[in-house]
Length: 381
Image (cartoon, rainbow, N blue to C red; front, side, top):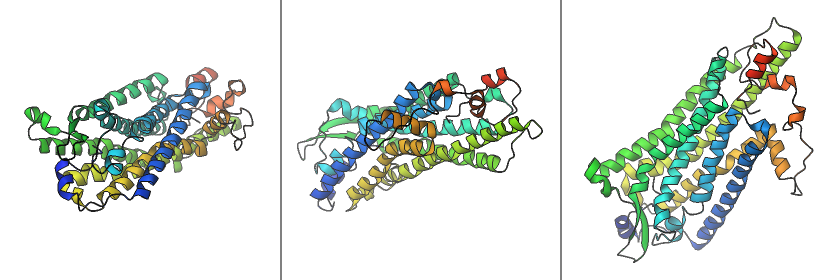
């Protein structure tokens, strides 16, 4: 989990063999991380602002998307601008951001990644319940349940990352005379046994709970959702023509959400795979790779791909969701390249009874005005 790639001992032994980044590469890295950080901050801040500002976006599913955006903001604000300096910029791996931030840095990054992965799991499980149990409206996601799930994901993420808060600390490197931020698992040996065993166990658990298990859940839920959605017909075929049209619109609306959330999940899996393999598997179980001549370049590539995940979600929402696209154009209308043509989907005054029906969590028979109103969806549109 720790982004400090080499231990002091390994760095001292392998110093002559490690290929350091050339000066142009370091300048490129600083510019690249700075640009990614700014884009991620702006994009995810706009997502947060839109969901808070527009009442039409105050849906249970968007509460989860808000949580996802906050997790990406954590990474873009606290991790992305600081995570690379001591690894690829400074040859002596000096830490210049203080002892307090040394403890918080890895802890907050691990918390944010846990938040992202398990929020995606909650969203997929919500879609699974909505599609597979259409006739059970009491199982639908409500705003209160969504807030409760957000609190649970935060609690779980903070607890799972807690060991990093204790093991990360600064110390003086006697060889180079600089301050270094690094994990020190030996402080927990009196409670949990040998430090190597503790580190191996923790990194394995983190890899399983932060990446493997969420990915498995996403694959299973979306496989069942895909089978159900693409091989089913819309209920209510014996109802009136108007009801059947509304059912078809609702069916199509839910279908539109699935590819967007599936794309978000797939990008999470792809972006974090190289970093997880390098930091939680290869360096833990094959520490000799730390002496590989091009390990710094390997880390740079893997880490940059992981950080890209914090900027992709706003672009996905813009391209795949009309309501978010309308919100983006509204808040960015001062830019000369952005044209805002007024509110069509985010204006409450334009909401009709039919739109309320289309926004239900899944296609199910409409029996009356009050029941339809009570079945308003967690679907974000």
